[in-house]
Image (cartoon, rainbow, N blue to C red):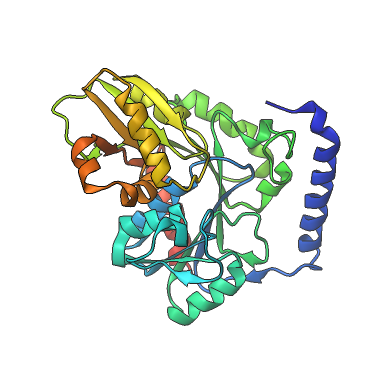
Amino acid sequence: MRKIGLLPFTILYWLITYTRNVLFDVGILKSEKIPGKSISVGNLSVGGTGKTPMVNYLTHLLKDENAIQILSRGYGRKTKGFRQVELSDTANEVGDEPLSYFQKFGSSVSVFVCEKRQFAINKMKEINPSAMIILDDAFQHRYVEPGFQLLLSPFYAPFLDDWHLPSGNLREAISGANRADAIVLTKCPNLTKEEMDRQRKRYEQFQKPVFFSSIVYAEWINFGKELKQVKSVFLVTGISSTFALKNHLLESFSVEELKFGDHHSFTRADIQEIHRKFDTFANKEMAIVTTEKDLVKIKELISENERQTYPWYVLPMEVKLSDEQAFNSMIKKYVRSN
């Protein structure tokens, strides 16, 4: 919803971001080109656009032929500075998304966090000069210039229809999309070819290839008491939007929800609140379901006794591209180019 009363602040924010981009465009503020191959996954708006699943997708696609380094700011962590994610790290130390990358891919990739991406990239190149870097949420961080930029935009909340902060959700003007090498509309429903063509026409002004991705949910993974049958779900999340996830679950189950803020740092008190609320439901065929990103923060807080008592499950999700072959070919062509 657009907040008309905040329009004066919106104009001021637009002026600040516009001026900053002009200073980069004319070279007064300097961008440093990242040596070697690098792909940035970003957006123009705040909130969940599907960056984490896309980083996972790219890593799966490229890791067998390339050494991969993932760089994230580590949003929500309690530490500062540059560090490599290690086995003993917690979400409080490195952030939920970097920890989920590390736990998903293990030693097959290297994951780093740092607020200053230019500094981090120099350190990462010292560790492995030939590694390909995937940057999570770096579209507005213009002090570094990736070799390839993917711009994500949710299908139901496209940046074309949005306003600047704080009236809307845009971090910068829609003209920023001109810096992208490709645009991916995320969280799409089933679209016909005619609907895709209509959507592509909306983005013709940017002269970029436009792709369509959707979220595919995998088999639930149990990390608590196992149920023989599930009839309802108690959904517990700390992500920006549960719209697609909740609708997916509602196709098969009745759903109760406890929603914390985006990147919420779960505590023991939160776990106790979750279990207390769960205990108020009479249905004993109810599962507690959370996301992979929340799992890395929740799992370490649940005692062994609670695991045996409460039916916790995680619901993994993956990205599916409507034209996967063309998308993969575009990415691999860039990575293999001289």
